[in-house]
Image 1 (cartoon, rainbow, N blue to C red):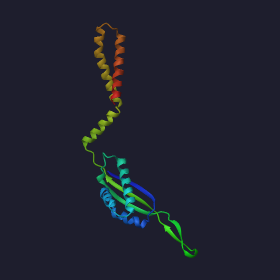
Image 2 (image 1 turned 90 degrees about the vertical axis):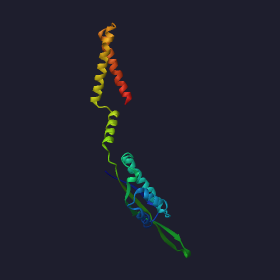
Image 3 (image 1 turned 135 degrees about the vertical axis):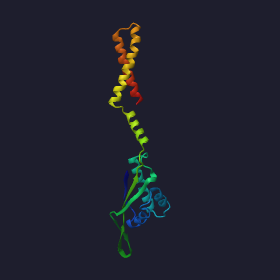
Length: 188
């Protein structure tokens, strides 16, 4: 199954043109290889791109879980660098003049894709067995109750031979049933 995940970094104080140079270096690479390239890139934009790629990979792994998705299977699908609002600043010059300059910002969006590992029949059976242990169904509860009652009935003739009356035997049966169901609940 294909897993898509994304992360955004907004209002980065780097011009979009400089950020795109770094983003184009790692577009289409596996995540681990891209992080290796970004760690050794001298550009400051590489730190921001690496941080966003790590975040997108973490989003994918937390959504699918590490049982189904391995970090080695993740690839960078798209990296989009958009222009953010530009901040206008002034620089004072000689003879009372003022020059304007623009501080450009950008938004960075990273999309990652990965394929989940196919579950085998044995792992599928283990998953269903775990779910049954976690919450037994009504049928399982009824079967365990029947077993507890039959075990209590087997014990009752011994108590009847010892001289106890029938009502005491019924009370013992109910106590045994309650005790076994409580033990089963504690075991869950």
